[in-house]
Image 1 (cartoon, rainbow, N blue to C red):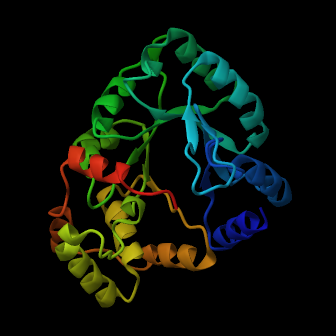
Image 2: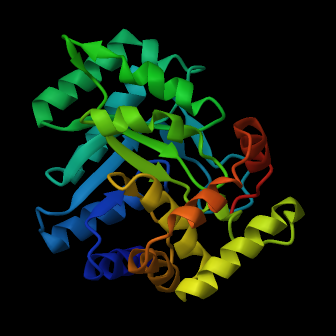
Length: 283
């Protein structure tokens, strides 16, 4: 908990004002609630989620790390705690919305989210994960309650390897919808790694760019996201002061057009990307 507060302070001192949490992230919400009380800064924007519960008890070898439940009961239960993040809580998201759970067809849940939106003047959003995240986004973009769009914020995986969301760029440019980019480091796979020999060419080019701009590979990966979607929020998953500083170095340079094109050429097929991701161990 102390480390979490310390990282939040470091981020704040470096100008970060957007923080993303979830009940599925262990103590994340509790730490944020305590920290927000200390800061008392209305400029801090918090986004959190509902639908996933943390179950690993801080055991990295746990068989089950998280439990997904997209039910009205779970929404109401988790909202009761998450609302403690108000008034800084500005975005409330369905965690890992998929077509399989039926959450986007559940009228009771959609209307409850609309109630929360209206009562607390809060933005309703969702996060996506998986090879069909574009399909999920398209479905969510069309959902209306009482003749107005329900979802105004969309958090999706986007990085050098997984670029499927790019096909919706025009929609986000032409509508008043917030895009949030997660997993910019591809869950660590964009850091040169001998375990993924098929990405040797990408690793070599990333290292070349990192040397050119005098930053780490992580900063190059994040810069790719920033330059792909300039109006989006790109999340950092930093868990140490060193990682945070490395990530923030992405703000010190811009990639050239040909560099963006070269990095873009390393994209993976979404199905392959997500099948590879499933094989990763918890860290």
